Length: 405
Image 1: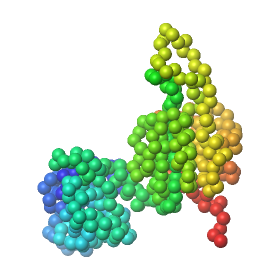
Image 2 (image 1 turned 60 degrees about the horizontal axis):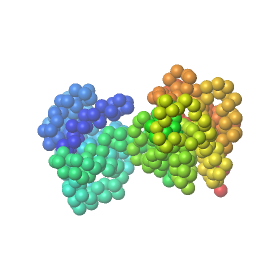
Image 3 (image 1 turned 90 degrees about the horizontal axis):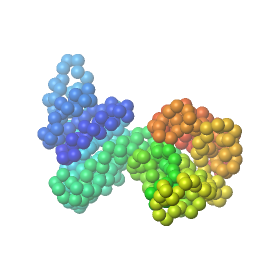
Image 4 (image 1 turned 30 degrees about the horizontal axis):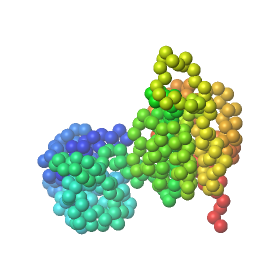
């Protein structure tokens, strides 16, 4: 932590990292320690907190080498290093190799070629746009550091511009990709659909379904973690879309179909996880239907089957993964849908099973392929299931690919 005014948000970041299973050790600059006390981080992390380069822990007879060299103690054996917030001063030190305190010396002791280093710039907009700061950021990028773009809005000083803390979600997503991503989709384009759609009854009423969008959003995150350029087409979802993906918000099945066709040019994969409305009223009313004027009956007509159309019209090289919800004769209907939709794999779940389906943060599913493959996944968080499904499809696709040459 360096001494940006956003350093108080680092406490929450540390807690999110711990919730994700990380052991977190904290190093503060002297100036940062004036803004927020090291004892707070020490109490919450259960780890000793570093501020001073020398004299913090005098060497004892049984002290190891790292105890005598604190900067090495914090640098060795780590999986990643995050500087959040990273001030203009910190960026300048990192770019020029200055090592005059514990944090900057720790930075010089970590090789960005082998250990992910994430810098989170946070400062006044004029400082962020200064030519020297821009040059330092570019130097750091060329050396392999990961720099997150700050947010835009009202800053602590009252001015409006670029320089805000970007939020924890982008930081955690970037770290996840750097530490856990294998780059198997690097240079590939992936399209994901998510959430429900709505069809109008009248200007005040719609027909929709219970989809929250969580499964599709988790798949978009999983594809981005593997290095893909991701387009996420989503209906009115109950959760926030993941960071770093292009989002296209739609509402109706017609808008969903048009957005999918527009996005498919040059795409390598389509994950059709959205719960698209199967039916719509024949002729939505142009004014609100009054109770005394309407008997409540609706005449419905089918909407376009987007997945089936893509299965018929797709370009060679597009991998198509469909999703199906079934509550009875699940196995038989899944096999029929796999053939009818023309997809390579079909992911199937039963919302009647406890903890699975719409509205839950967990899901249970099985996947079948037109190559005869099958995998069953027990109840698990949707984010984990997304990674497992991504692994399955990528591994099966690699196994089916022709040998080089």
